[in-house]
Figure: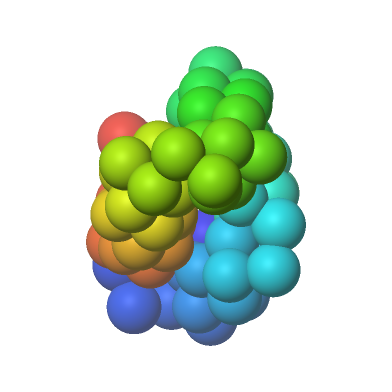
Amino acid sequence: MSGQGSSGNVIAALCNVFIPGLGHLIQGRLLAALFFFVSITVGYALYFLIIPAVFAAILHLIAIISAARYKPEE
């Protein structure tokens, strides 16, 4: 992937919309993918407590933006 705004980053951001962390996995960032997937999934699973669900929604948005703005080191 060439950099920010590339089609690879757009695809990664779209993957993150549907499955949190998948876009980071596509970009080759395993730890970020694992962190986002586990934390967002747990937050959404605890939706009945309200606060974890709100936290998960904000973290989900951060994951999408993070995948879209990723610029690999060269």
